[in-house]
Image (cartoon, rainbow, N blue to C red; front, side, top):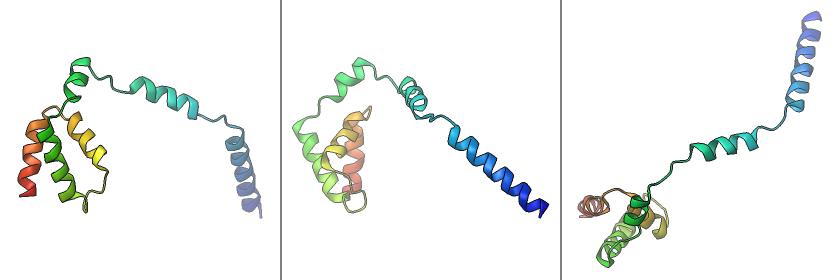
Length: 98
């Protein structure tokens, strides 16, 4: 009986502490914002352009792999744009398409 009362007291105290604890989500979001990577402007400028041929190749890649990697065409294009060497990455994926 004493063991049961001790467990009950610990449970009640734990619930009280948890329910009175302030929410940490705003602090966590602030920390995430500070840690977010900053992309240099040179990379932003480079990733804004893909040729029409590269876009056609990316569409082919997307159509081929959509069953096993179901993301939108826009997301696929974004992923290639974000790559440091988009041309080389497209070549590699086209070899896998073959």
